[in-house]
Image (cartoon, rainbow, N blue to C red; front, side, top):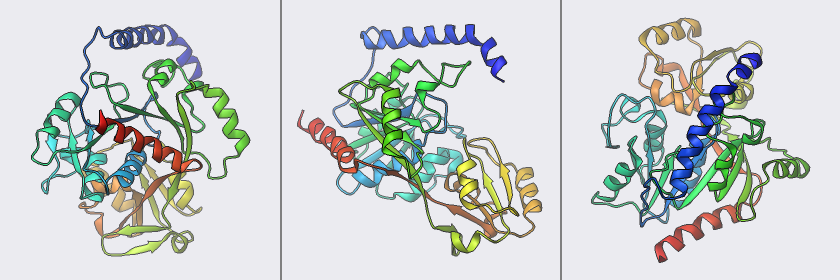
Length: 340
């Protein structure tokens, strides 16, 4: 694989040049971007997938939705619909995509919309009878036709953008210099025991500008899994035979948190749409055992033939340090936008 990636170096240079020119044109105002008079917060990454955008968006929703009317706007990756859609009682994962549908189910107080054209999506959100006061753009770091007021850049522990290279030789969607657009950088998926010394090593490696803020977060798994009609503790399930099912970018931590030597672990591609054949195969492999899946996969599987034996494990993003500083920084941006 390493040899193949080295052979792709010329293509990476070409891709990097194209993205650099595009960014330059936006930076110089030669390509048009749109700004809005409401706080727009963009959460995204430089690399392809797996940095924890969904739990970070949910962190912001929990933090903001008690005080403000919040809307999320996503592309709706792999949805079987087109254009702008505002979630309502007819919504499902096929219409919205799995992550937006997850937001809609978990946070009934917020508005959840999808539109590949984020500019259009924001205009249509602001044309609703109930207008959002804050808009959270999910996975929109490279969507430069909208100029967000605050950019939050995520980079995963053990897979920092500073150690990566641009596509297709590496996994970066644009060069590392794109990190300069972010006011806030969060190193996600850190060990809960990350030492001060290692935090400093990462800080030195990322070498942010003085006006940028760096935070470290971990994924906190629930101690309970949730099914259609009951809840079970993870502790009680650890020793039992079960099937663990994941269709996410990096499922290893999910498996490690739950599995024992007798468990069957089934892995599918990220955002996988389970066919009838898939479901029958999973049912045959599980042989009536409990199936535990991720929250993102559950929204696609909860009404399937697996529903009676299916449970999901919720996760949350948890900052390791400087919680108040992070939240004050976001709130300061929101309040400043309302004043201007």
